[in-house]
Length: 161
Image (tube, rainbow, N blue to C red; front, top):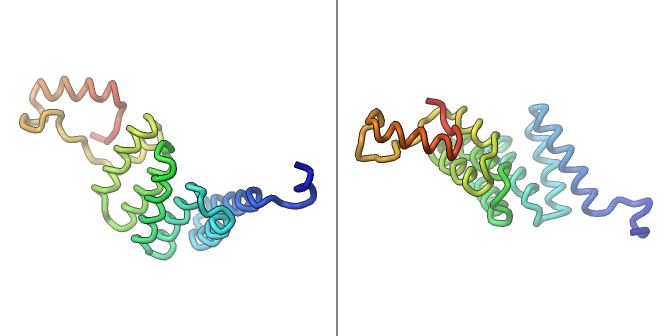
């Protein structure tokens, strides 16, 4: 413990860069955020959050969607139970016009990461509806309506109606 006194540990250096990344992202400065995310990733290349944000920002700032998707998927492979990693991949998909893939990823996130309000809000923002519970019946059929309400109570709201 005492050998780090007066210096910055590699983990601290990565965290400092990552915090700078998040600040730039909040301020709408995607290119600067990407530079900070890449620095953090250089310090800690196996950190799933650094991977995911680097992927997200590569898609936003440089339109490198395939690279962004790859980094985000790698991050999810490391830590599949954190909502933010699903949100980042879904945003990459939305940036390149793959709305259905974004919805699919967010729905998987609800299962893997729990009923996170940020995932539910992202699905509502996309504004699509769930498929009817029984696809062979019309969505207005009383059985589908009843099962849909039950699904809503169990899984929570997903999409805007």
